[in-house]
Length: 323
Ligand code: AHN
Ligand code: ZN
Image 1 (cartoon, protein in one colour):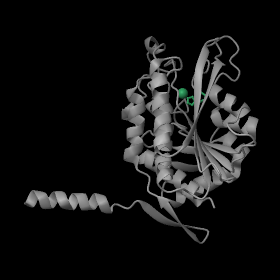
Image 2: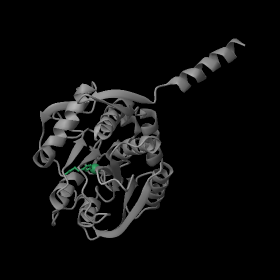
Image 3: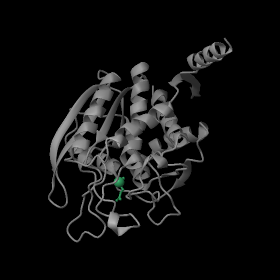
Image 4: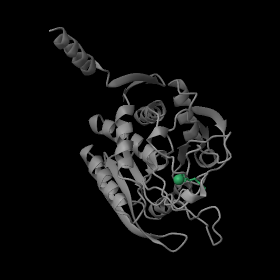
């Protein structure tokens, strides 16, 4: 009997857990869904469990199908933008940008994005024997997508005022290795370069974009990245202020760092949509990124629910604060 009572009270506790939070923005109260870092973590693990998601592999294909299905399950209209992209070394990459559209009728829109592919080489591994092994990409790839899948799930439950487009870019991480002797111009971010020249909708004009890249490591720090500040300073200000207000100042550092070539650069340059990058930057590492970066150690052990929560909660509050 005692056991049943305990069980009952646990069920009740779970049932009563808050699903929205009221926050005040400029005098207006808005209901913002509560971000579940458990869900985000599971969405990351599911991707990682496929294995490395390197273009032209079956793991890559299986993961694409999972992402499409999941976005559909959350109520998005999904567009699979398939194209062959030519890598720096001539490899033809059968690529798919996966686009989830919520509330397609709304003219007021926000773009959220992350890359979903993983790098074919661990060329920053301390052990040269690992250079030719693919990166598992728990953080570099899966983390941004996992956070955005949880954002998508919440949007499916209760729509924000603005329409949301979630884009999972392919072929971000096929950039030329550092020691490559040939032409390596614009070798990164091939999926976002393609999408930027071929947006999924004519006259697509969201208010702004937010890119998430490597948003899951324990104690990650997110600095105000230079291209983001150059192209989209008011959005950087909006996001970093929101994070600070929510109590995530230890993650969102109110300082600038250098310029980082990433998907947002091409979105800004080619489309003119102001787009920021929330990306882990470590000023004390000579890589600039986490020690796991482009090594065989980019695994689930480097994923921390507190960091996912900081990023996911901030993004949800920004999105639901848009009127
Ligand atoms: C460069 O290494 C030039 N940019 C980092 C882009 C990146 C790779 N993000 C994740 N993997
Ligand atoms: Zn990478």
